[in-house]
Length: 414
Image 1 (cartoon, rainbow, N blue to C red):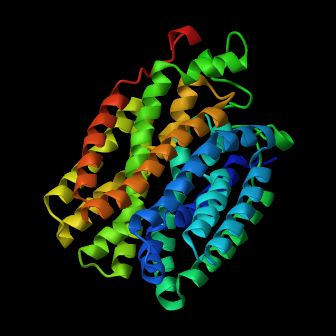
Image 2 (cartoon, rainbow, N blue to C red):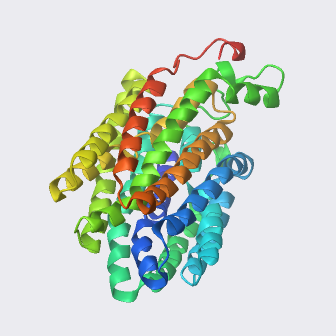
């Protein structure tokens, strides 16, 4: 009898497709900024505040999404999250005031996308794959990058032809048509469902060490959250989030300020997303050989070069070079998250812990998205923001290198 195909590959394909549409939705807000300025004469900082609110709500929902994933599994979580996201995008397409934009995009859409995010997808995959789990997560997360490449230029094209309202409504329908069927038909909580087996047999294991909390799970989780390692990881991902969402929200307005047409600027952001695929796969592969913290630290080198170029000059060639440098590192740290958490603390509460790291990441993103618009409104330039981002890249490299990667013998040595 032929050996049964490993079902984890179906989980990987489904995860890739879900993150493809998620990437297009979450990284496309920059396209909205100038149309909203044109229609309503709102300041960029006020519009960017909607994305800041989105990131704050998204961040606060990440630990909850992790808990819901651990409790109910991806089928239920992903389906309900897709419905909420669809409703948020449809309502956003009908926005007539800043308060509506803040509620529809900043709150409802954010709550929905938090349940179909990289953190919950990576946590799901970590239950299925023990060996090469960073590389497997990288393959799934490359869907986010491909989504940026395919969907962001499409959104810009549709916006130019039909306006931003119809475009966001179409985006909502597209998300439901892709995510809900995949969630209901393909996604399973863990290999134990229907007799499946995990790659490397990780199901139900904690990877030893810190997964077995002395004094109970609650006290163990608290000790993890205040440990030196977790604080360093959190600081690194806070800075990563600041840079990520500062860049993706302000790139298109910045590039059009420098004379690039809106469609070209959108295409450039999409190209940066595509370039993040080889970046995240490269850093994921390196992490399988050299551990997690070294490649995590190295993800900030292209960012440092990017912001240095933008500080020195705003010419077209440097805009392209800087954008592609940033794109190469844009998604590189994402597949390292669940693997690093699993290495340090085991798999028993990986959804909760990974969700907490992504919560911290998006708190940084909320600040970065608003800081970009605020600094522009204050100075009519992005130069000061680029200087701040460069300094933060140096700091993040230091916090990454300071992580003690080898698991300790007990929770008390963390």
